[in-house]
Length: 252
Image (cartoon, rainbow, N blue to C red; front, top):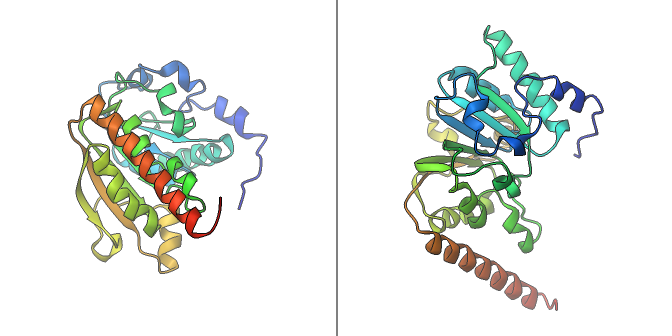
């Protein structure tokens, strides 16, 4: 269901101390926007309504957190959830920031100076309707190549999804982009780790009997030439797969 426009969202976000109003201007200086700039930074891509981010960040005041989503009408809900959860704990939200950004163009706002130790990707759009759309996946090889710019060496990506096809394909995407998958599960709740925080989508899919798939991947060394070839090879495979399916369906 498409979320309705919220005319109050932008003014309320502009009045919020933990909303980055002009994120592109913070490129190369994200650490400095926090009250404690020497702390490690963790990033959530597609923070949605912010429940996961709020609970995670409020439980770890020794880490700075950045949450990204694409529209104000979603971020306003994240802002309010952060406000509520921090207030319930009697805390000031000084280790969390949210911002609006197109994640496919994340390098417009981040560079190698913005070192991030961990990235969370939770229940992103699987882009399954058309093969040509797979390149928009947040775990696609070309996207992972972008994150390598600012993810620290041995930095981690925590990924969760309900979608079988996305998870299966991601098991290939991560190694292609120079990541080692150090842990994975096809049913996260069968033996749920202590660190897991269930998201709103996670609870909904669990009620529907859909298991949550999850993995942890670690960034390993890879040269720029190797990475460029890996991205090009993935693009070729995607095009070949798309062409084969179209041919089988008799589509020109």
